[in-house]
Each structure stands twice: as structure tokens, then as C-alpha cells.
Image (tube, rainbow, N blue to C red; front, side):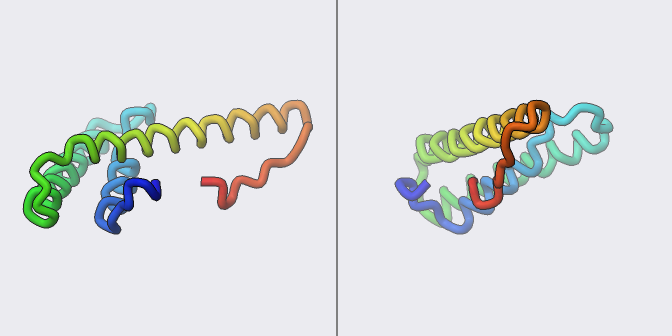
Length: 102
């Protein structure tokens, strides 16, 4: 993440994008999904305006792709930690301290 030198706005975008991405959550009502989709669209519009007008960066796609890869990598790490935690509980092998890992 250091190589991207993310701004506070970009970090807020990543967090908001992660928060309102509900495609992997089963059992949500159609209203909740619609709300999440609307908010995701607003977030996308806001980040477009930020890059286009705030940073005067008309070609920001490569940067956005790298940021999206950060989200994907963090999901994989969280999934791995969860799987290891479940296995350690099943086999009573060890205790995982996950605070501060991510």
C-alpha cells in the first residue's frame, strides 16, 4: 500500500467500497441490496469527481485497479486467517492473535 501513497480520500473510498459490497452476503433483502447498490454507485461517482476535478487525473483507471487489488488481497488474507482459526479450534492446535495483522 505504501507504493501507491494513498490519500485519505482513497482510503475512505476503499473502506466504503468494501463496506457496501454485499454480493457475498446471503439472505439480504432486495431493499438492502438496492440501497447498497445505490450507495456503491454514489461512491463510484464521488471517486470519479475526486480524480477528475480534485486531482486533475483524467486517466486514473490503473490506479483504481491497483487499489481494487488491495481489496481482493485483504479478502484473501482474511479468508485464510478465518480458515486457520477454524482448523485450530477443531484440532485444538494453537491460538491465533489476529489483531494488528491486517
